[in-house]
Image 1 (spheres, rainbow, N blue to C red):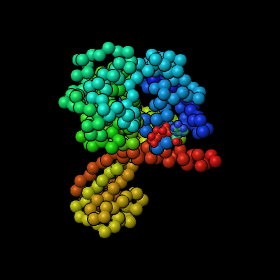
Image 2: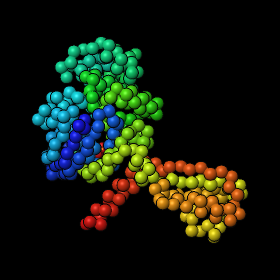
Image 3: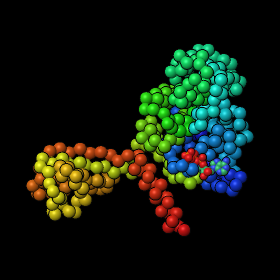
Image 4: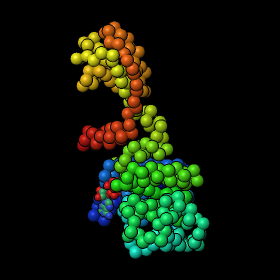
Length: 314
Ligand SMILES: Nc1ncnc2c1ncn2[C@@H]1O[C@H](COP(=O)(O)OP(=O)(O)OP(=O)(O)O)[C@@H](O)[C@H]1O
């Protein structure tokens, strides 16, 4: 059974806007799923629907086997939500804020757990500070502590690292890794695609209210990935020799390196043929290296493909 099971969910807002158009998504226990999509794609709407904050117009959602509408409390108890916007009580002390969040779920205060959580998030030294005294990054940590205070099994992080510095981002990634090790299921929305690339097990791409794809990150990168072969030359050249014209090469500005893009899934990459042709052209190779194109390239391509598909259909 999937930990989070979203089936054919539609959401039409009051004004008539259809933010989700039959979205389906199954998320397994203990996995980290990155939900990617451009602005307005429907990510927050989907998360809100799973967390029972927004009621879907149709379709069904369960968390841990509990329907989020008809069995809201049981489902919500399993969920921790780190919202996009900072919504903290400014005059409250850090430790009270976190303690109160646990209380909301009817759970008794657990001093040991609270200390562990605050230490893990580097908030222990700030436990007696008022929220308003904290930096933006620290406030984000408090949001995470609050979301984790009732020991949820599923954690939603909605743009957790928007506007935070590199160090805090790394810290958050470490926290996510620790939670995963504890078997917590994590759903992350992010605009930083390298973040998804770094920490997610699976990638879901959503655009215009539709889930375009859900796939294992590694297989997605292999399936859609293109690689680039960079060839450094001993001697710079002014232009690509005519005999190499059909190899789809680009020459660096300083004339010192050639780049060859190839499809990793193609029957033939053409590398062998290219190397032979280079040698025939009398070009001496100093070094070669390869680079895989990024998840970002793949994401941009997917979204563009959907847009052109819709134009074709129109
Ligand atoms: N309460 C609402 N009433 C009407 N329309 C809404 C409401 N909330 C969101 N929308 C619209 O639904 C669409 C999806 O919004 P949503 O916030 O889910 O997108 P998102 O993918 O989270 O975007 P972002 O990356 O900008 O946070 C947007 O076009 C938005 O304007």
